[in-house]
Image 1: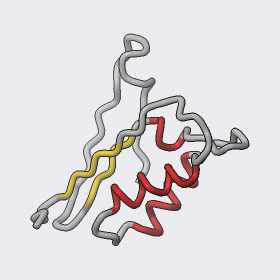
Image 2: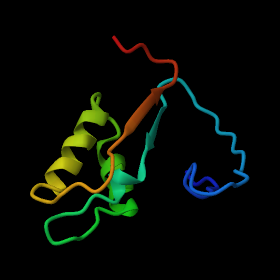
Image 3: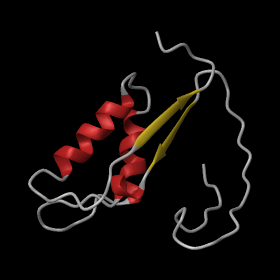
Length: 98
């Protein structure tokens, strides 16, 4: 899925595009801050957005995707200083969390 984006919230005054998506029962939506895909390893290489998307795609059926993702980023950046926050929010549509 590709949606229009704007500048990071709060950086500059901006008009943000409105996007409508349709979710079906069982769909999941992950919201992440840039600290997730900008995490760096000891050599200073970033995880990167495409690698993040690939990792999520590979693990999208996992029940505990958020923790798996956070562990992946922590493993990737082990030994490197974290320069930004790491926030991941998962929304599940029409599925009980039990």
